[in-house]
Figure (spheres, rainbow, N blue to C red):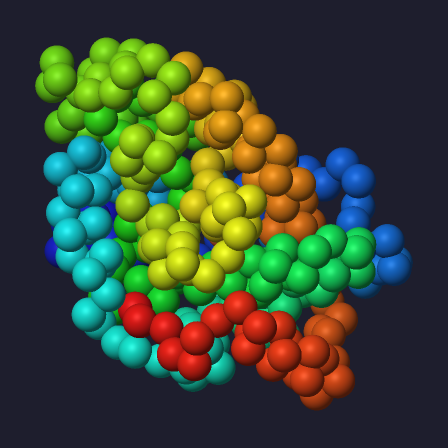
Length: 293
Ligand SMILES: [Fe+2]
Ligand SMILES: [Fe+2]
C-alpha cells in the first residue's frame, strides 16, 4: 500500500475509528448492551477494508519497539505540551474530525459520552462513569502530530517476546526487537509475574490518558484506562506470565469496562444539554480545574 512516491502511507486508516470497527469484526457483541436499539437502527458497521487495517498493523508492529516506547514516554510524560480545562480538552479532541464516517453524529465526544452513559445506566460507581468519559482522551496524541500507529491499535508489552496471539503477529518480523536477545525471550527484560506496573506497553492513547489521570481516579479506573486496548491479555490471555495476583484482581475491572467501550455505540446521541449539569458536577468532584497534556 504505497503512495505515489513509493513511500508507505503513514496514515493508512481513513479514520481512527476504522481500528475500532475492525475490533468489532474480531470481537462481535455477544450481549448487545444497547437493547433499546432496533435492528434497523443498529449502525451497519462497514468492515474497514482489510488491507487498510493490515497496513496499519504492519506499521504498528514494525515501529513499536522497546526503544521507541521509552522515547515516547520521555517525550510525552513530562506533560509540557498544553494545559487545558477538561471542557477545552474535549473541544480539542473533537478537532479530530472523522470525515470518512457516514455517521457524522459519532464524533469523539459522542463515543465517550455513549460509553459513560452506558456505564451510568447500569448503575456502576460514578468514578467508572468518569473513566468512560475520559478513556479515549489520549487520542489527542494525533493532534500533537503522532502517527495513527502510535496512538491506536491493540497494545502489547515491549521488551519481551511478542505473542502470536496479537493480531497480525507476522508483522513483528520487521520489528528490530525481534532479533535482539535482550528482548526476544519470553520474559525479556522482565521477571516472571513481575506485575504489569513494571512492564512497558506499546505506546498509545491508553498509557497517555492513564498517566494524566493517575492522581485523580481510583485504581480500578486507572487499570481500565491503561489496559483498555490490551486485547492480547483481556481477550486472548497471552501475558498472564507477566501479571501478578493484584493485576489479575484488577483485570476483572478491565473486563467489566471493555464491552462498554466496544458495544455502546448508538445512532441516537445522548442529550448533552440535559446531561451537562451531571457531568459538570462529576468532573468537579474528581478533577482539578485544568489538566496538563
Ligand atoms: Fe480507546
Ligand atoms: Fe473507546
